[in-house]
Structures are given as structure tokens and as C-alpha cells.
Length: 423
Image 1 (spheres, rainbow, N blue to C red):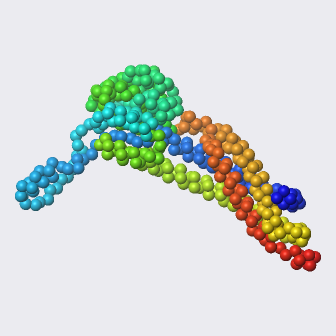
Image 2 (image 1 turned 135 degrees about the horizontal axis):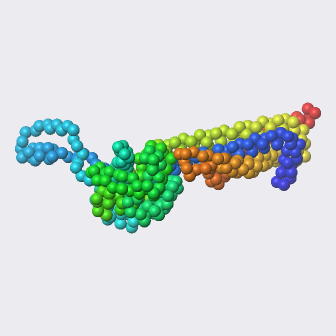
Image 3 (image 1 turned 60 degrees about the vertical axis):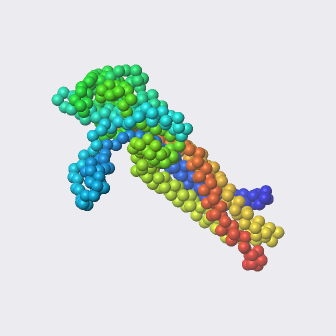
């Protein structure tokens, strides 16, 4: 094998220019493959993170809906049982049941979830629809009462807080964090008081302790956050009054199945993260397919380059092949020589491609990317996952091996007698 490798390198050096061009083709393909995959998956992580980082894996809530069985149906069922004639009843403009949007036995549900080994974290939430009074103008908004430290720990709340400190929201009474769009509309800032009116007409003053920017402009015009006790006090509700329970799981892929289980177990409505954000996952999958398709095409094009160069080399080295076979080298030895030549080109170009790919990823990662919609992002996002490098070099070696196989097979079938006789 050492002798065969020595012969392959000798042939490669004899056609050094063409060999270098083939290796450069592999290098360029792997460089672009690694750079493209790292950038596209970094971008996917950024875009999905705008929603998924702040979305619970399972959300438990109580949706107001129409009663599945109306009183007239119950009364008529009793009449029919008593022997009354059959008839039809018609109901129009059915209204939802008159009940509060709270979760019954919320404290017991949270305790049961915390004892579940599949659950990572449980946090309550109380959502209130309010109006912020700015002079004669009332701005519609939604105040979410949250467990602040749970939001910081599991939902990246601090990353989207462009002004203020979460601790001020934890310790303060009657404090609020405004969405940036809403704060701009109101012309208010940290330390100022804002007047809020609830749906029942109660009014209160809240002190602004932070500005929140999610990157979604429409959401930032209505979304606010407060300590959950502040919202309970604002709505005049007891400490056990919650409208939502957010659940983080240890395995996000189990969310759909657990959502159905929790819904049946606790008699509540449940929404899993995959169902709530299906459009984002679809977009990520499409972008990944495009990235891999472009990278694979680049590697295949490089493989055709190696194939053409090896074909030309075989035609130009027929004399050398004939001499090798005449001196005792078998057809399989000749085939191995050209396969080794192809693999040397692929390995050298692949190694250089990995190095240049890492360099290009760092270049992209340091390009400034500043936008008002994403205050926490200062450069283009790049994913340095090692799997892109492994996929790239594996596919490159496979492509070069296939590209070298057919010319090597042709070289192994050369008849040395015909070549020498022709000369």
C-alpha cells in the first residue's frame, strides 16, 4: 500500500497544476457548505428564538366557549323520555358560558406538575386586558402577571429587557415593564408613573421600571409585564387566581403527547409548542433543505472536476499504466493507485475547506448587524455546530471516491500489450 501511495503521489505531482485545481474545487465547495450551513442555521435559531424562547412547551388555560349542551336540549330530552312527540329545536346567537377565565384548582395543578419527572419548570401567569390613560386617549394593552425569576431563568426575559433590571419588578409594588412600542406611544420612560384602567373600570397608578423589546413591533405596542401579585391586586383577585400555567419540559419533542395527557388529566385546555408555532418550524425546515441542497450541489460539481481531471490523466498516462501492468502490477493495483490519487485530492481539499470554512464563519460572525427590532443582536448569527464539518468532509470524501472510481476502473482494464504494440 505504501508503494501504491508513492506512485499515486508521483502521478499527482506530474500533473500538479490540474491536481491543485481539483483540490481547490473541493476546498471551495466545503468552505461554502460549512459557511452556508452555519449561517442559515444561526439565522434559523435567531428567527425561531424570537417566538420559541418565550413560548412554554405546554400552556394550560381555560378557554371561554359555548356550552356543548344547551338547556333546551336537556329539557327536551327529559320530555322525550316521558313520552312526548319528537320535534326539532333551533338555537341562534349562542353566547359563551358566563364564567371567569381562571384555572380551577391552579395551585393543585402546579404542585402535581412540579412532582412530574418529565417537567422541568412550572410558572403561573395572570393576563389582564387594560387601558393606559394618556390624556384623553386610551391605549389598549395586555398586562401579563408573571413569576419574574422563572421568566428570567427559562424564557430569556432579561435578554429582551433593553432598559431596567428584573429585580426592580420582583421587589417593587405597583410596578410595570412596558413594551417599547407602547412606551414610545405614551412618551414615557423608567421612573415615571402611568395610569391604567381595568376592564371593570378600576384605576391604578403603576411605576415604569423597565422597557421590553421582543423584536415583534405589533407585540411591543400592547405587551406589558408586571409581578403576578401586582396584577392580582389590580384585578382585585385572590392569590390563587391564575389564567395560565406555563410548563417547560425536559424533552420538547414530547410536548404534543403531554399536552393531551394534561388536558385530560386536569380538565383544562392545553396547547403545545409545536402546534402553536408550526409555521416557524416549517420555515426552518425549508431553509435547511435549501442550504443542504446548495451545499450538496457544490460538492457534486467539485466531484465532476475530479472525474474530468482523472480521465485526462489516464489518457495521458497510458504508457505508465502499461509499464506498471507489464512489470507485475495487477488491475486492482492500478485501480487502487488512481483511487488513492483521488482520495488524496479529496482529503487535501477537504482539510483546507474545513479551515477556510471556519475562517469564513468567523468573518460572517463579526459582520455588524444592527437593527432596532433586535436590540440584543449586534452581528450576523452563526451556528458553529461540529456536525456541519463532519457532514461536509464525509460527503466530500464520498464524492471524490465516486468521482475517482470510474476512471480508476477504466485504468485497471487497460491492456498493456495493445499499448506497447501501438507504440
